[in-house]
Length: 298
Image 1 (cartoon, rainbow, N blue to C red):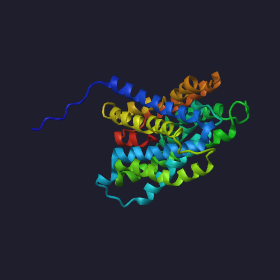
Image 2 (cartoon, rainbow, N blue to C red):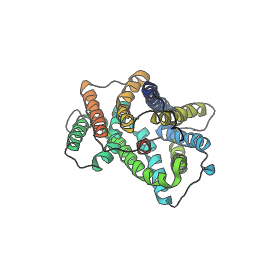
Image 3 (cartoon, one colour):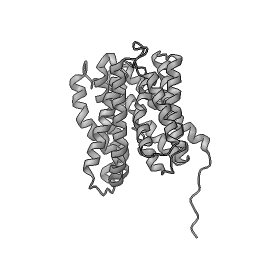
Image 4 (cartoon, helix red, strand yellow):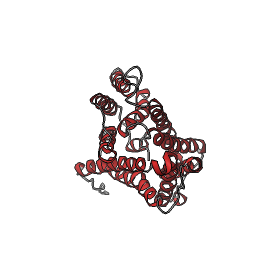
């Protein structure tokens, strides 16, 4: 009888990998925001998508993979959603603190999780999420605290994230591991010209290119690799629950690298959205690790 492959029993290492991945992703976002005065958020979008696509293509080499194909429409939607998600997220963090923008963006995957189940307990998570949104969005209270246009961009990014998840699940069934590289390339082909045209100055200059490479590595290559390794060591529910901490990590990144500060009410709102995301993950029906990975934007 063939022996089963040895399982790595070190969840603390996997948790550390996931935390480093989140810090890398949000550190990349902070680095991107720091060069907005040089090339603008649109220019950063062009840098992130172009260089990130090159890294993913080199990593996955989709031309060497066996792909069934036949689901080109879903792949195109996936790529457009990925590009639009990056574009609108960077527009959002021009005027909205990083932690708040990520929390608002998180409503996209949270909505997908909510609408996929209609059990009574899910109404608790919906109520928590709505409460968090109410205190984050400048609607009827403290209008000066959060820019409404920036908040709307973050919500659009969240909607793109939801489309990304749904289309990615369909495209992934046909194109396998190469989906991320192919989708990123599609997004780059569409949004890079837009970003370059709207950039405040030259994007692909010798001064900016190393920073763009750093953004691509921190925001795509490193977190993706670490999350892939963490998925092999953690149950899908644990993985999804830990990923719910992303808004808090983003807020801390904003404090450390950008000097952003949130009010106690905003921290409470973030906690409500994090609790809603973690709760919906913990009470969700069993799903595969592949499904958990597809829910992550890279």
